[in-house]
Length: 399
Image: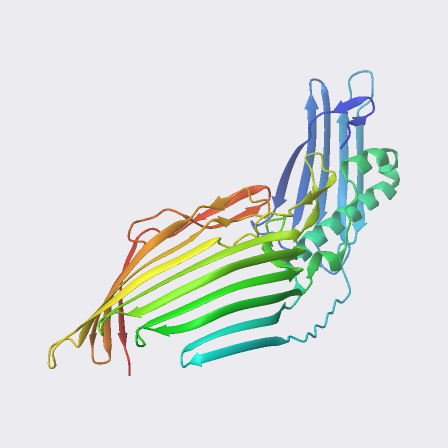
């Protein structure tokens, strides 16, 4: 915004303070006052905007008072207009119907029971929808535009029209673009194999895949901070591989392991964003990793069963241990915040008798610190840490 000059005085800073009269929560019958003040040396400028919150379906009635103390010999400016009308509601209807054919093609060759190779190609789809929480932002923008128009058209402030235009630029309102998001489409290709080895004691699953996504849906927090919204992020491409093994070493001892690799990046994702000066500039995320998709996943576990002799106070004791890991995970489209590869160790001991089970468990036994979630709201970043080491007991009974 350019310099704000009124009657020869350059306004360098505006101090905006808010006051709500009444209870803590703003009800439709209460009054809100917004004070804009400027003071420097012997020059004082103040404006008070009073809003009476009436029926949400009726235009808003508001007052505006402007006061400026000028250096002698200039006279003090004291202007006030009451009962100006500013409509701030929307009447209309949005409707979208989605109909999509989802073909899938598969070829499988099995040379022995439990041993096969396969190739698949399938169409993926996620329905579009509405970000209803965006109406709060739209109402605020509509209210601001309506109040500005009411003040400019009022004869009391007609001489201040340029100043009001500078302080309150119009905000563009596009209800459909702001509240709706499009369906997500993808083509998924996969080749893999299921193997049964070691006389049925070892099972292996291998797969490689490629996914091409259009209008990918990703989740963000609204600029106002009021809830999360879904947006479409152009095109993305991902490919990777997965492998898993399960082995029954003995009748009592078994092990399992799995690993996955995913490389998911944006291929066509360019948006308009405001820079530090408030101007719209193009921002490209092409080549950046898709957020919330771990590049590596790993799981290793083992189980041992102690079978107790008949007529004992226990039937069996089962011990489980597993290590789960994931990373790196990027939290934003800019890839400026991420969680490195990390893992947690977990364990469980179950005592079983008949239909009853008493289990003692531990999660994150090594008390590993990690980021479970991250989001940005109103210009600030917020990090949610993962749960620390936890201990617990479960009691179950089957009837």
